[in-house]
Image (tube, rainbow, N blue to C red; front, side):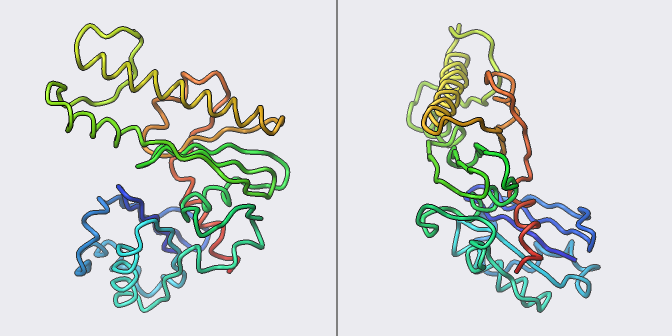
Length: 247
């Protein structure tokens, strides 16, 4: 069995797969809850599978949390916990940038899609909004923009007269109240950012790209972009699962 995990700045996702790579269990936690050293209670859902798990793979952009998770899982399962960047993944994906400066979640996303035939733009709506470019089997680099929810949260915290606002789709550009004005600014503002970035990437490389959205808000923007978009919320997990047998 395979235990696959992705530790992000906001969320930590942990999935259990059987030997045929069929998903058996999936848990999503607030990453802040993993900053404590005693994590034994978080892994109770694995109790009936302890003796069957023989491979564990994680991606992480929060080193101290990964250290805690690694220690706790190793005590419970007595199986080595591997992190993507500890592996020789460059045999599969050719990296044309300094891989130390690319989050392992973004590399896992790239590994998930590559097929040595197509070109991809991967847009991940996480704590940051990231764009990654994959040409066949080459990772060319990417773009990091402010995260939608993080930016919205910061605005609400800093501007005393702006009420707590949840981002939703909004048809009207002009808001008739403060909340809808904020929603319009964020929704249509990020729509413009996303479309412009995709156009700039296509212009730079003069190639056709398949475009994949992943992350929490991917569903919100899928239908407003004038491109064919595929949404896959588990792209990172699937990339790690693809890699786990090749190491």
